[in-house]
Structure formats: structure tokens, C-alpha cells
Length: 200
Image (cartoon, rainbow, N blue to C red; front, side):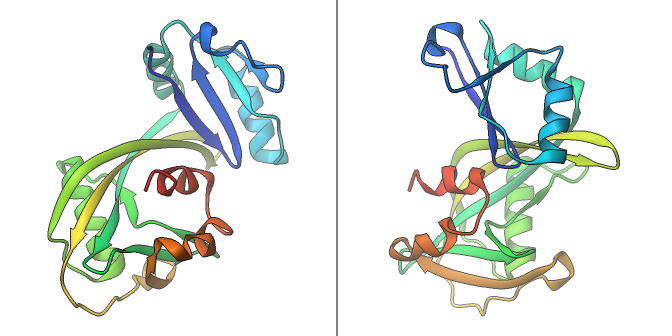
């Protein structure tokens, strides 16, 4: 089965998938590589839209073209679990989120993920367990449309350090939450984060 992708534009998902997988697409707005710029800008400026569908016989190639068409940024972050089976969340700019940040020059994706978690939360990660599915989203910055890929890793933490939010990054809270309290996050987070934590 060919790879398929989901890119979030605010709360609107853009699906990139082969035609065979898009037969039940009556509720989706069909877009193509030529009009996607205009449609993305409309969503960014006017909020709501039906989910979008970009049909492609090669979703990998189509995603690669979009990365070249728009300003492409890579970031990385962590889904951190402690010895009490609790997961680490941050509260930033009024929403719950996972610790993450942009890739720096000469830094590997894994190094970036660990550094961002440690900087934003004030703890020292024990180890990376495995790579999780990446998430994608688009936004506008200084008039340019940005396509950001965030690499995610599940991580282990066994220490007892006090959590310290990185306030200069607008983080106001850092909190350990068990799965039973995930609704607190789901009710006030981003679609890509909902998608990621739903795999736990």
C-alpha cells in the first residue's frame, strides 16, 4: 500500500493519497498542486474549511514537491513517559502541547528532540525508545506559507527532577498526566497532537 500523508492547516486536514484510497471522498474538497497555494491561504485567513484531498499516484513525490514549493522547516520533539506511566505535556500560548522545537544547524533529529524536551521542561531524558510517526502542519510567517515536519520520539524518564517550564518560550506549565486524564489535553490542543497521543 502506498504511503499517505495528512497535513494540518489550522484545524483543516489535507490528505495526500492515491486515487484508489480516495473513492469515499464526497465530503472532501479536491485540490491539486496548482491551486493549493491559494486554498491554503484562504484557510489560514478565514479558518473553517472542508477537509482537503490531493490525489497522487506517488504521495511521497507529491509531499517532496510541496516541501520545495513552500518554506520547509524541520522540528523534533518527544512523547515522554515516566516510571509511573505518566506522560509529559506543556501548556503554551493557551493550549496543551508536547515539547518540541526547530532543528538547529549541525544537529541530528534525535539530538534536537532530546534538547528541546530538556530545555522546555527542565529534566534530563534517560533514553529514546523509538521513533513515532511524524506530523505535518502549515502556517503563515511573514507572508510566506511554511510547511513544517515534526519528528516525534517516545522517550523514557526515570528521574525525580522538578519540572521547570521554559518561560522565555511562552511555556507556563509542565505537567505529568496519566492516560486517564488525556481528555484534559484533547479538549484544548492541536489536531496533530490529538492524532499522536491517540496512538498510545
